[in-house]
Amino acid sequence: MRRRTLIAGALAATPVVAGCSSGGTTSDSTAAGGRTTLSYGIWDPAQAPGMEAIIKEFERANPGIRVEIQVTPWSSYWTTLRTSMRGGTAPDVFWMNAVNIQLYASNGVLEPLSEHISRDGTPVGRHPKALVDIYAYDGKQYGLPKDFDTVGLWYNKALFDKAGVKYPDESWTWDDVRDAARELTDPKKRVYGIAAEMDRQAKFYPTIFGAGGYVLRDGRSGFADPRSLEGLRFWTDLVDRGWSPPQSAMSEVRARNLYLSEQVAMNYDLSAMASFMYAAPAIKDHGGVTVLPKGRERATVIHGLANVISAKSARKEAAWKFVDFMARREAAEIQAKGGITISSYEGTQDAWLKSMPEFGLKCFIDMLDYAVPYPSSRNTAVWEDQEYLLLGAPFSGKGGVEQAARTLAKQMDRALDEEDK
Image 1 (spheres, helix red, strand yellow):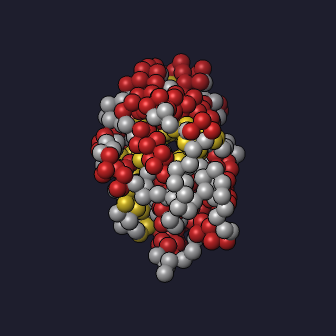
Image 2 (tube, rainbow, N blue to C red):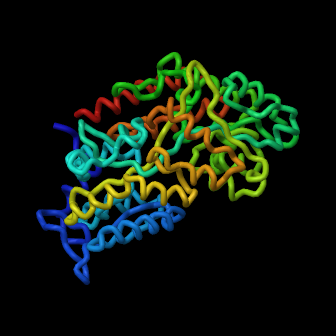
Image 3 (cartoon, rainbow, N blue to C red):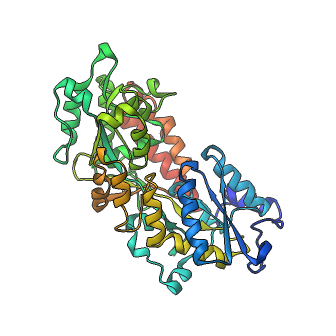
């Protein structure tokens, strides 16, 4: 018997009561005027206008259904979601990410979508397979992607020009990054060549280095894999040599902020951050981005949000119609025009690319061919927290990354074993 998780315990602790998304066998209910009203939970207010535009078209095609957006800030989104599930008032449809999908799916709080997809011919194959696979669990699909992110290498052209270093491009290897970081670092002006951020990003280092020993494979940790250790050593070596700020310098300031303030010349970051880069005058004027350099192999991390349906929703058929609509071309094209994030539906990304032509954003789409899914398990947060605790010292210039990674691998495997109990 599987261990009761926080979600399962929370749901069991309090009886489900009637609410805007109450469960039970109640059929789809209707609001005033005979329309079914769905609640839609999201966390990013910047995307609200785009979601409203999609909802407008959905309601036009489905006049008997009304959708109300509920925006909850990221800082409290998951806590609020657990509380609303306990009280029977969770949104009918809401955003899900890779970190939490297996946890929620394994505890029976999400509606399985596979039968709906098969019945209505939802074009799941038009979305990146690596992304679709993230939202499958135990042989069933629980979420349908709405967008995707890949990770690219951002660079400051002005700082490169000043140092006389050529711009990164698809021919670069990580050796080129190391050499450029050395040339770009200017201690007198407190400018670093690149930022090796710790926090929960440690899982990306083996992957974006192209080491091949990704941190989670077949349910076991890959942090002790020699290829993963090679990737981690590459990044901590940059800190040790002073070509990247140490973790202590980024305890309160993200690497992204250092890049935006022109204190680092290079930084790997998500495609979703393009709009933030574009809003910073200096970066808009002389910022650039390219594919991640090649290590042993080419790799990047893919992630993206998905729409899911609450298993306690009293309006599941209407909720499915909305989720199905969101997974199709029309909704994807509307979202792409907003320029905030990349729609995951194949062939709908042009509007996003054209919204910020200065950056040459096509590299994020080119990397789909070798993108690796964001690593996650049923309790991802447990071992993510251990990453921060164990790898923080090596990323602060104190050495010992190999031993720290091996210790992390043991503790991570222990945490993964606990998930099966």
